[in-house]
Amino acid sequence: MRNLISVFTRVLACALALTLLPLAALAQVVELPIDATGGLPFQGKFDKNVRVYEDPSIRVEWNKVENGDTHFNCIYYYAKIKIAHASQLRTEAVDGFDRITRVPQAKAQVLARRTNAVLAVNGDFYGTRPESYVLRQGVEYRSTMGPNQDILLIDEDGDFHVLLAADNPAEIDKTTISGKKVINALSFGPALIVDNQTVLVETSSPTMSAPESRCQRMCIVQTGPLEYMAICVRMVGCTAQEMVELVYELCDNVEVAYLLDGGDSSQMVFMGQLINKTDRDARKVSDIVYFASAYQPEE
Image (cartoon, rainbow, N blue to C red; front, side, top):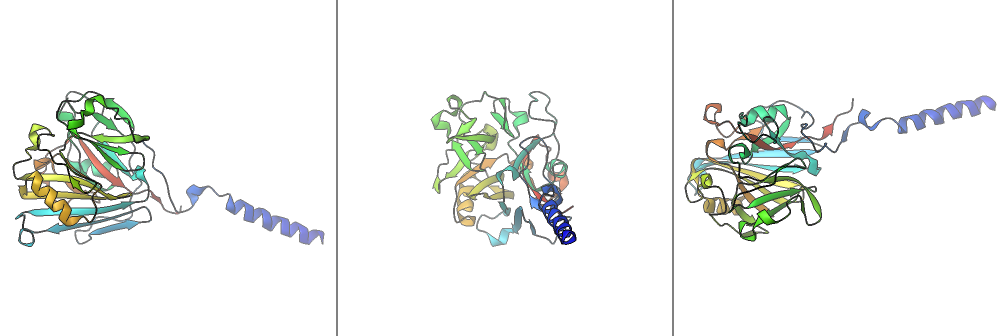
């Protein structure tokens, strides 16, 4: 009887020990730290014929539309992104966001590879505009900002909010919004759509955005909770108003649509490879917005 009790005790102890194994030893989706570290390594390598990446923490699907398939008479790329946790939406600079002068630059794919980005797009080119407001990965680096700027705030739940230029965002606290901490703020614009309503004011952006001209453009959209879309127009390009029309055409629901830097800066990188243009046509940038995996496979 004593031997049976001893055996039972050992079995029970082993079972309990298994339940107390470190979570890191098991496959899981984790919350990424809000700092300058990148995402977890994604599973697999880029293949030009692969349009979808998926693991338990993220799904990205991208597509290309040729000139003949659209009334906008341009080539455009769009990616649909779904993440499991808001920490997977991140920003990165070449050498930190605390630089003000002589800000180093690199091509977006270099930054994407460094951070294990599943999908990355160029940011707001903060390094060339000293008047831009800078809050990245939870840290406010520059509190001043110039006039006539729509500001995109991304909160701790991954939700987008826009402070319109008409509301004088320079006088508004940009570190919290609706009771939530702001993790990233972008200042390029203009904002295009908020709550499925067009809010485009072409003067609410840097002069370089040239909203009335047909230019290569990059737009980032929130379509639902932890669901996003990135849209990149190239070749003959489009105006800001045409981008509004394109967003409505591609998205059933638009929480916020906001323009990032464009022209030769507009770059979309999937699994470490630039997909919307050749490398020689890509301008060096100071920062990116990216979506990372948070899946930790079983060790």
